[in-house]
Amino acid sequence: MKKYFGFLAASCLLFAGLGFAGPSTAAAQAQATGATPPPNVLVIMREFLKPGKSGSVHEKSESAFVQAFSQAKATSHYLAVNSLSGKSRTLFLVGYDSFADWGKDLATLQTNPTLAQTLDSAQEADGELLSSYDSGAFVYQPDKSVGGPVNVGQTRYWEITMLKIRVGHDADWDALAKIHNSIYGNMPDAHWVVFDKLFGTDSGSIVLVFTPLKSLAEIDAHQKAGKQVISSAGADQMKKMGDLAATTLESIETNLFAVSPKMSYPRDDWKAADPGFWGQQ
Image 1 (cartoon, rainbow, N blue to C red):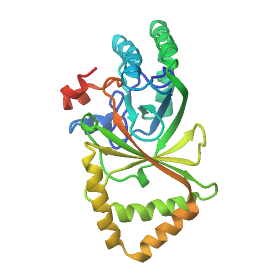
Image 2 (cartoon, rainbow, N blue to C red; image 1 turned 180 degrees about the vertical axis):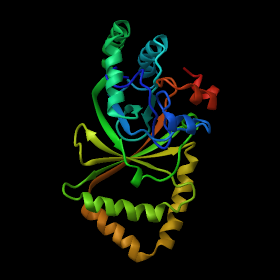
Image 3 (cartoon, one colour; image 1 turned 90 degrees about the horizontal axis):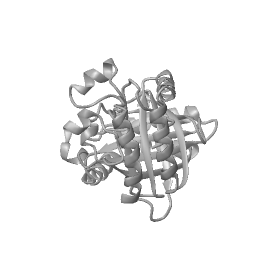
Image 4 (cartoon, rainbow, N blue to C red; image 1 turned 90 degrees about the vertical axis):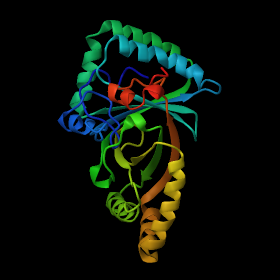
């Protein structure tokens, strides 16, 4: 977990309820049901691991960051997820109400030299396990998202789709998302949250779509429901969506990630949702 993004902030959080930091008013209301709304700003740090350096080896290294935040009584929190497909990597997810709140987080680090020094040491050790590292900042797109808040403490997997939009096709992308949601939004328990990449590699053309999963069995149910929705949508509507996708999308990739309780710095309400799972730290 890199120190540069997110700790000690006060904000609401993530993907249809992936909450990280202290609650805003809206988040506090949603937390009454064990969930929080998406954040306006999402920061993602990606650690790509060398062969043989994932699993317990990486967990041990990351525990130094978790301990540092715990000892500092940090009031913001982060979620770590490990890849089950694609390159071996861990994502660290931090959400904010605004970029101003992110800035306050960074300023707080500068006023805590003890924590900063501890994180420097942990980062140096963790760096030996990595083949590469990058980060990006994303902004929430409510008009393209479907579904309400999710209880993050009970979510075990995240399906993440990365879309690369062709330059000059923003209007086509808006139309494609609208048609897609009108079709697949009718599925039982339809739920996904969309973020546009504002800062980082390929910023302005990358879109991330997050789907929460309590178990992998939900994927089987989603595939079955998707086939039923397609059959009822009509050939004309499906063709229109396919044509728009062909002209709008440069690439699309979907991967599956598992929540790592040992590498996360969870909120109290996450832990309360399943003490046995989050108590694995």
